[in-house]
Image 1 (cartoon, one colour):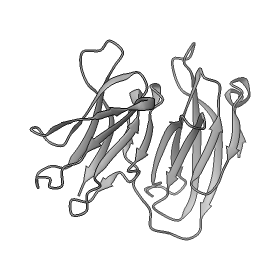
Image 2 (cartoon, rainbow, N blue to C red):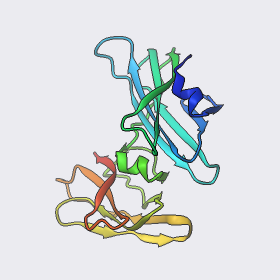
Image 3 (cartoon, rainbow, N blue to C red):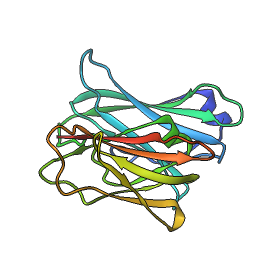
Image 4 (cartoon, rainbow, N blue to C red):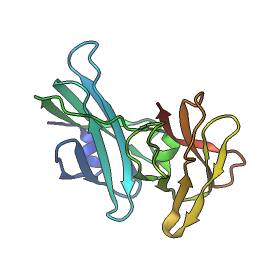
Length: 202
């Protein structure tokens, strides 16, 4: 493990480092993000997901390795009040000894992170066309409308619930040419939808 100055100046706390899930506490003005490298050239380091758990008020960073070997997990920090770019806060060096069945996390955007969104379900970023989940559920503060786009013709409006939770129903049948499932939202005074999460469909 290696620390950089932002870890201390931003008053970050490591709450847990259980395998493949790292939990941090940070002041309200600070955002966190995880990335991963594999020390072997051309090896796939796997996928990551960072979101803000509103129930615990903690940042949760997930890593799903796809190969064995040495991995380096970087936690980046950004101060919303003064920073223009992300700064390295801490690095974890881990060694994966045995390959297990891994998941591929969905792709989230900078807006997802900036709004402190929370992905509730599904966490797997690859949706099976033969066994689709019934819903996508997210918590998205400061968003006043959410919709799901599956292809050029299929738009599904999300239903809103208490505590900024949105539920989007996935059709039981998806056309063969659809390759991705995109969650979009309108926030603040924007007139256009912004992408929050992207799933693959296989």
